[in-house]
Length: 175
Image (cartoon, rainbow, N blue to C red):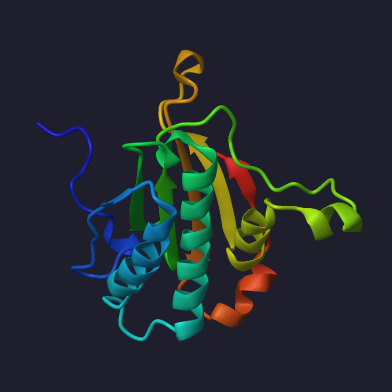
């Protein structure tokens, strides 16, 4: 007996469209494969605007780069899992899960212009924040004593008019 249904609710999916999760070695060079395979998976959705595919591929690549640079995923034997799913009517979400880190990713809003000019990191999350309708993080295992076992970074994109993304309002949160 299954506790969770094995299918996506009909109102959240297109008939016959489901994606298997993909596992990647935690090596920065794999970012190109992450982009390529995301594009391949998204090609299963007929009529998806190229602008949306480009935005999702870029954001997934940035999230992957963060996972390999700032978590145990970038260490020897590390890995990153990428999932793609429908998250409500007209919403598509990718999720990248790393092997664990001490802190959850966040956009560094408190920098001066000079600090941004010399910053080596933090721009990828700003890019995700500007392109996605919503994004956030959550702990893979939500118990305090399991902190550091992995973090999921997700970003959602509307399937409807891509040009309307900016008017949807951002929602950045954990959970």
